[in-house]
Image (tube, helix red, strand yellow):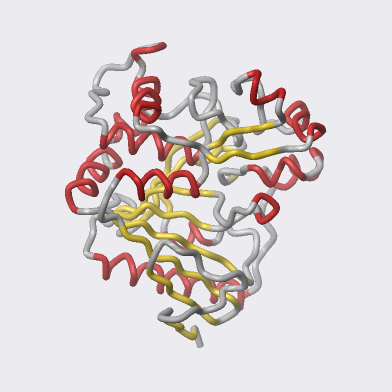
Length: 300
């Protein structure tokens, strides 16, 4: 059994409820809900195919992070040439039974079934210019490289410039660094010479800024009770200010948009049986409401 890349919404949840929720089986979806998500996945795959690109950075809504002004919680890399099947999403998940993070591939439908709200969901697809996309594809499909960038310990609120922990979005960031920074990660090493350290050094040199969460002080101590939240990797100054800085889909997209001229974005959402497809970096309106120029598809 696995838990998705649980993120900052846990900061506002009770420790007991969060612990039970994210390593328990998800609530069973109705037949209609499953049908909607499968049909929505088909629309997403159509967009992926139409891109004629080898991959896309993909994020989905999951946990309700609206309290923090965020829509997306979990990111991965959707690969046309995935060994698991076209457009499967390569991602980091936390294996609850093993109590360790793992990398595995998941079809688009399964990826979307991880949402917390089957009635309304969002997906973001970021497409890259050919050269940047091919470099990322090569890194993402290299099993040795992928595993060298995987930390031994997981934390949902992992600090991006520490080697102590890692969350799903930070793994994506370090994969981007390996691909675009020209890093040679063939030989495993420890400390400052490790693949993860090299990736983080490159991200820092490129000005990568993680997402900042301003927290009420009691929430800082939830990590003592929830096994996926930790504070011992965060700078003391951040903790004193009740701040966590964490890699999230929003910070991944901001970095890619600044780093890669020519990157494009498509956002899709469904509300019931209505799907909205929006092209551009501005977000779809809350409630999955179509704006001018957006395409609307009915799943009936």
